[in-house]
Image (cartoon, rainbow, N blue to C red; front, top):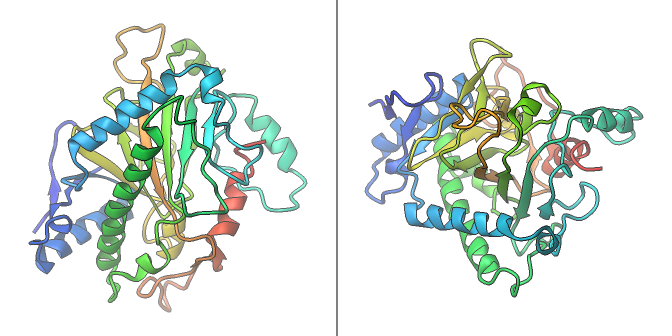
Length: 347
């Protein structure tokens, strides 16, 4: 049974997988296994998949985007009432345009080249603003909320939405475990309690397209995610591109498809799976088919990064190594890997 769906509107390299068997209580093992095989195949080949029938109601996602727009429509003074803390240690609250610089750089503690690398990366700023939300129970990463009287109801909705996404994420992790042939499909859930996930609200304001084409500013440069998996909800603007599995360096449009989410493999699941699943580079660039060639459209997106708990040790999973394919990576905690990746993002 092939659970991928052919759709002429999506990239030929990114399959659409019907996830309903993992949402419905009536989904039997045979149907779930077919979905697992399709999702893992996508993870092996391109690292990305569209998921339809994923379990999050359309009305809930519409409300999430409404709140996101309300947030970014606030004045800068009001948004700065919830500022991202200095540095990269705590990743919460509001980041104004140019504060964060996304990159693929990994800076280990004590690396003398780190300061120069960060300076060079920041020569081309990212023209976006963002807001980060985590679990209210995670004391090491305290949320930085916009005051209730500035945006009434925002905290309540985003707290609920965070855990709604977490439920879907846990189903996806179980689905992937089954597809990898792991006997205990709940194995990954033992290190993914939801405590360390991250809900990110993103706004790419209109900008002169020529500045992006000339490389003077970026929207979001090519990078892989530090998570185990990422769930992405995007508006209909477009602009997300995924590196081609057949032609490295060439990027393919990941066009929005109504009522789907995009799931991609992150660095940690690549390490856990011993490179069986790909953490693929992706970027946000100019929207296709702009109505106005001079200015980009505004773009809104909501990624939900699914990460293991900070002290979880990321080591090769059962069934992912053997004599012919020994373990590639040394074990590492999520906290240690996150620190190396985050160091280049914030000064």
